[in-house]
Image (cartoon, rainbow, N blue to C red; front, side, top):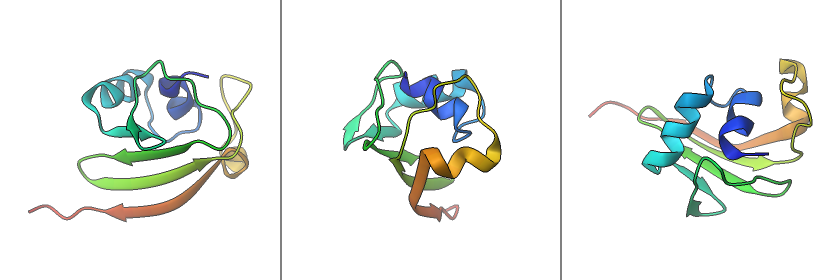
Length: 89
């Protein structure tokens, strides 16, 4: 599954165009490298999302096979290993 679609389906980023733009701006790392929106994600990959107001480190447990998943099933697909908010300077 493409990175931008994965971010939208799992609810990490609410809209796919925002996920695509975030990846193009370099705020999303896949296994430690800047990720393109078209990068293919797979189980075991590590994601880092460094947005303007928060930072998340995520481990991908399983890639969804459908275009949507219920919120209660999100923990089956991702594990948030680190989350911190950023304070305005």
